[in-house]
Image (cartoon, rainbow, N blue to C red):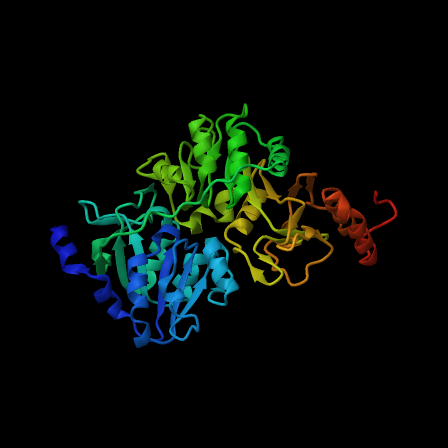
Length: 444
């Protein structure tokens, strides 16, 4: 087949390509580096011709021109499956709505329930076989593109080409239009220096990680801190099975700790569905046959995770109440991020032989006015529950670690208060007494 001729026949300018969008359409921008910045900018320039165009995306880290050009939301209505820091700022301005989900179900939502009129996706350049690599969005990209009436690809030569089992490519025969152009640099997520609290939390978790463990790190600073500390430890033959490949795995690889040799599922291969972080992450996954990108409906399925012996899941959270309910995505009703795959890994790690799931947080946080508040609270007041109390596992702060599995409400209250900041413990005890979950034998 002459794929070059077919490529040229489908080549359009961004302005030509977005003419296919009609008022009332549902548009999909996919996720993270797959965000099509040239097409988004061209669509924004059509603002006055369109109304009620609804856009879905997630973890977008570059400016959304469609959204920024339309603060009244008369023309474009943006919605996110999982908020990046930028999308969080859009939520704060009333320019983004969150879509509740768990990541393993994202593509099935499209397959069974959702319509996509036009999907726009940034990809790596076509190879000689006519395939475009879906890069670090491979965990969800192909399933969404398959559901679209019209598929437009935006070629970005900076995008890393990833290896995988399946779902990491799309063939030119499945594509309606292609656009090219100059792109801004790939967005990166900077590393932040570890605080004493971070190191104390990481040290608690490290005591329960054995040689040969397979690791899942969630989004946030704590996983990278733990990755750097594990890289300096005596542990060996660690593995990767994760929704997100981040800098933590680069640290472990550079230290010779990440071999994947002892994995009971897909031994010898690190498995992931997405990747972002510093430039080192993109270099690490680029054409690396030791890292397989696969659909998240497989990677995050609890039955898949449960096949992995000594599966260690490590995620951040925002707050926990004394009953063991966990919020990892909101402060009150303010959307911070999303459920993502956290619940998937809590469930899967509990099914794993030797598996453990850790939820980490500092004991306090500081508001903009300087007020210090406890992350361990009596009960939630509008906060979104990410993880139900029935699936609470290890909870860790800089004051210690407790395992809530199988514990009564009064035991949970005592255990959680024991890892709260000392300044808040007496007030938490008083609230626990009022709620009937503090008994005489509880410790003070």
